[in-house]
Length: 167
Image (cartoon, rainbow, N blue to C red; front, top):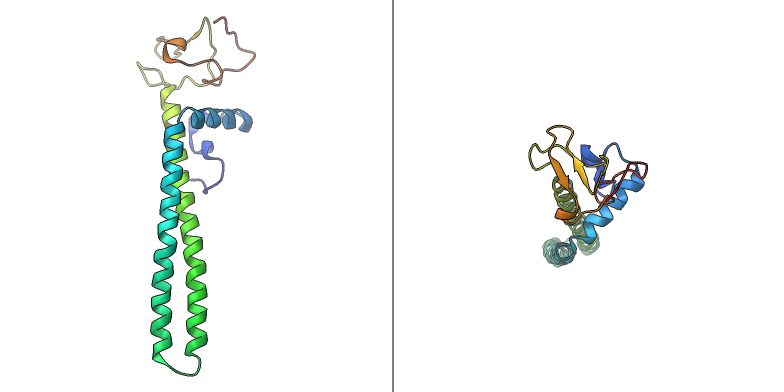
């Protein structure tokens, strides 16, 4: 389990053996290759946050009016306090919903990139394995994974700089 806004890539065991800098580069690449979804999920997050704030505000004002109509010497100050607390909670709730929406999108983006780097034959993770002649040989089943055929480079699969890359 991880907390929102923490290192999203640490939720994936395939990325555990890599440094934070390598994982952050992997995530940046995943985001850049998923631009349309980035814009879509950003819009969804803004809409969710934007919708929850007025709904929370309207609900708060309704509750404040009910308290104010009940009367009593402190009814006005209670209604004001309820209205202020409700508006504050609406803003916090809307922001949290926006963050949760972004976090879900980010997790899906990373997951799709991690899955794209599995062996087609046996599903073994090929991240960080040596790139030789523009491809990776799966250590589990021996299948060759051609990077160019999938539009990938050694950087995409987090190949270490000290590993051979003849392609």
